[in-house]
Amino acid sequence: MTTRRLLLNEIAPLMGRERKLSHSRNESISKILGVNRDRTATNGTGLTASNLVRAMSILTKRTDLHFLTLRPWVKVLSKRGLLRHERVWCPFCYQEWHDTNKSIYEPLIWCINVVQICPIHHHPFLSVCPHCLMTQLVLSGDSQTGHCNKCGKWLGSSRFKSGEVSKMKKAPEIAS
Image 1 (tube, rainbow, N blue to C red):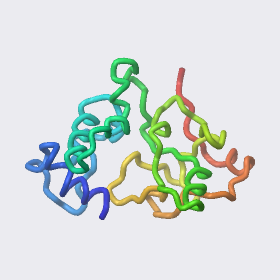
Image 2 (image 1 turned 60 degrees about the horizontal axis):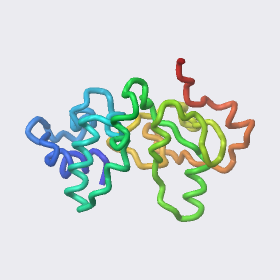
Image 3 (image 1 turned 45 degrees about the vertical axis):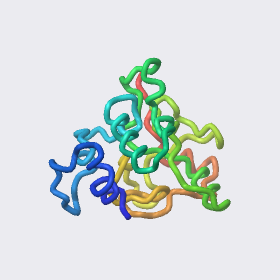
Image 4 (image 1 turned 90 degrees about the horizontal axis):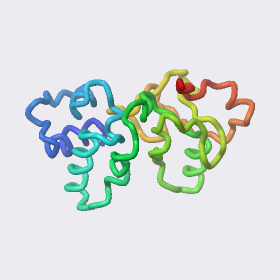
């Protein structure tokens, strides 16, 4: 099941979004979530994250899902410039999880704008697919975690050595 189908069929109705949707195969994730173009809001401190957590809590019967977002930090963190507007990743994390049969996921820390380096592997995050050289959407309707949401190829790799990683486009520096 694609992310788009999950959102359209299961999550959007619980967020009160079903009447406004066309149920088109190409329905925009932003439109489904009602966030215009700011898909980063799903991980943030605002209403979109809160509504998404509520819907997911109903579906999963879990009460701790707010910890998967920055909602617990709403009174501490400024929303301004908090989240990235493009997806970044550590290819070493993806590959390590793949090779050890662990769940492939995108840690919340990868979304935070000021975090530029993987705290585990101490390498800068990547923001461009090494295969198609395209930047990645934060959330895509047809993507699979750990894969490029443009060409679909695997983003993890143990072949990236320090020199190779530094030659690839890294996550953009934030302005001070």
